[in-house]
Length: 115
Image 1: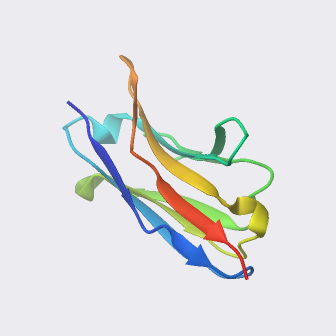
Image 2: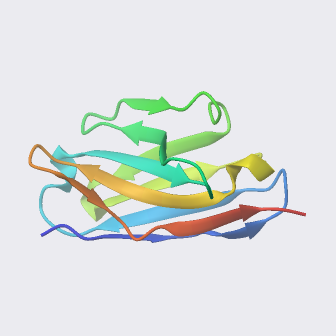
């Protein structure tokens, strides 16, 4: 059974930085694509960034050049470095693990960008 635990959210001023981390249990982490999604109030959940099992990354246009996703397979962790944060980045951020059987989700961590 896979469990995902996110950490690192919080309140930050516009232009600031945060680093989100996701720790995954289980033995299939290295074979899984990992992603970060976010959901703002009244909006649908959207993909922020994804990293494949082979290390290929892709980003939403709105975060390109500001966010960086990375993974450490030896530690079963995936991280999202967020720089130059904007108020429109405010949302609950969710870690996602995509396996060939099903997707798994963390409980989410709140990111608030406000002065």
